[in-house]
Image (cartoon, rainbow, N blue to C red; front, side):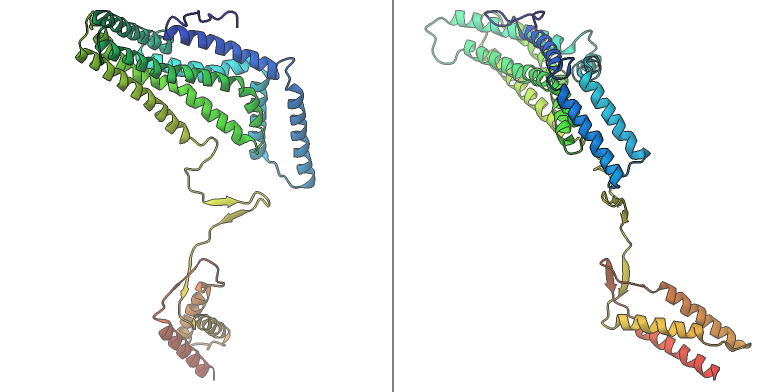
Length: 391
């Protein structure tokens, strides 16, 4: 960390210098932590070897005993997850090129493209904020010197000093703290990447990923949202003069308060975006098929069956089925118009028999059947007519 510029006795020269120093120290600290964890002489390399051995052994035991079934569709995601986790957890070049650049460099590049700037958009935003902060501080010092020591009550200098504190608090409370928190998460990232291999600890990895993305997008929204407030406030602060009035000081204070509110909204917006993200789940799609993990069977919902709601409905259903069977088994005449009528009755009874429900389940919905007596009388008449013709 000796290559980074440290703060002097009076602190950093400005917010931009503080951000540059924090970014440099965060990058070197993350590299040092990676080397300590999973480097060539890392302290967690034996633990990683033991974890992988147990993982392979447990998978082999499950396959030998028949408790686990692995096909191409299930084996491919496992192997991809295992390979990606081990690559990023044991190779600093891969971790820096993908994870670090995506979480630290990508939001800054997106902000630069949107604002049309060259270089780091976050650093340029901090430099503009330093310019605004310096203009307000100079006006506050000039107003304090002009008021003298005998001034009582709230003076324009006091209001301007309060505005500078709001500007400093809004920036340090969002940008600097987000960079420090993101650096700490990236330093512990290799350990959480290993946890993504196992299903029981995958939730910890997803929590780490969501937190890292939260603190990665905070500077992006801070630059985009706070940049407009800085553009509006900078001309006002530079035109305060040596003796600003209370109205001018109140205007600057109001702008600083709005700036702090916007920074608070940045945290709220980023939190809402990350909270609505579900890594690796299709919760937004309706579940049509439920798969049993233990037996590997597929359970589908059966359609609703409607049956008569009368008290004698089961008996009537059984009688209709018996009559239909008897009509189908009865001897048919050889010829004549009666044979045609009898065949129509038999076909109709068979169709009704095929449409009758065979069993009642938990999804049976009763409905009133008003035509049950009429159908029963018609079936009885057809049965009696068939018996008389047979004799």
